[in-house]
Length: 479
Ligand code: CAO
Image (tube, rainbow, N blue to C red; front, side, top):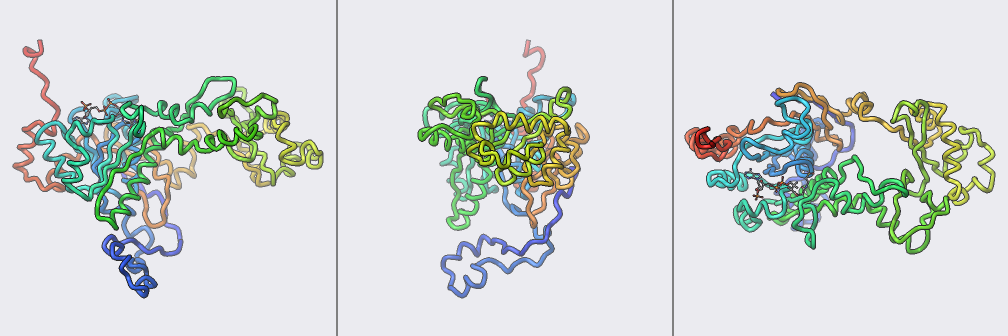
């Protein structure tokens, strides 16, 4: 039995009307009086918060995703209450089940942390009986989500035309590396997308090579974009009654997250980027946005500074922002009250060419305190700072456990493990995180209870090889 954990207590907020598919379809033809009376929506629920079902209750997802980008998307939809049926290749499953394994024989954390709250069915999509089951699932579900290499879904016979004909209401959502264009047929992984989406060229130090970031903006970032597209398509379907294709290219997703750098590219044509520290250092700008080290991406200069213990602790650092409105308190704290009135330091434009000196002066102060002491002192003065938290510190952080952002679940194969719960907290749709499914754990349940196959049908399906791994050739044959 999967471990369930209540992760977010409902907060007291004002009632919002709940959508009803049937009524919204008719909203346009409503008389003004009806509109004034709730715009076609049902009466606000009087059930206690969090007890009126989940946001995506009733939404059925045919989850054909693997690795990270697609599974991130479907896990979020599952957290919101959708019934996510993950289709995996018999005997093999999602390749991540066996990648980066830390416990012998158990599903890896790579897999378990991306596939919570789902059910797993094994189907060989190339077996005739497997195709029949998939067609039943297409009729049953609202959304098919996939992130195969370009063309793989078509090669299974699951073209858009076929799916749309089988179930005109189905939404077909895909992650691909690139959108239509010269690279559309390419396979793509996380770091390829970070590079092609403009993030890597703008990350790192000016003197060094481009850098990728540990945050999975290509995979998880695109999965998040796709989830947004799916929910929006579900909303449009309430009006149109039909599904549509939803495509998120990883390059586009990364660029969307790196948009401030495209902003700077255009600003560059009008002069130097004065908030970049290279401006203060007198280094000329080239034709493209340079790497900016730890400079802030916004209008308030910031930098990462050493704190007490930095010599032995690689994370004894703090991000310090010299936000203009709190310049006075900063000067007082670091023992430079004269900077408040000194024309070279008193205003943001005067400070820009001196940022290096300013930050090294602030650092002389932060190095006398731990990052948590700096955090506490600065926050008393509304000075925005951010301690560099290690993953160890995050895993142990009580407040993240309390909000359900970090959740401990139990798994029959590996015991207790931590996962990231729903980062979106909703007052009337409470996320309960459950463990990831074992390979094919729900095959029988889905075939019989969801798709209506009889016990006899099930035995036939089993014998057909559609849900079981291909038999290994006998030794004599193999030789
Ligand atoms: N039954 C039978 N066959 C199945 C199956 C099933 N249930 N599930 C998958 N397969 C088959 C596919 O049909 C495909 O076969 P063909 O190529 O012969 O048609 C094959 O498995 C492999 O699929 P793939 O090409 O998608 O997988 P890959 O490991 O070679 O590539 C990846 C992985 C991620 C590079 C590629 O899927 C991709 O580019 N996806 C789009 C971008 C993306 O999401 N990238 C992020 C990945 S996370 O870092």
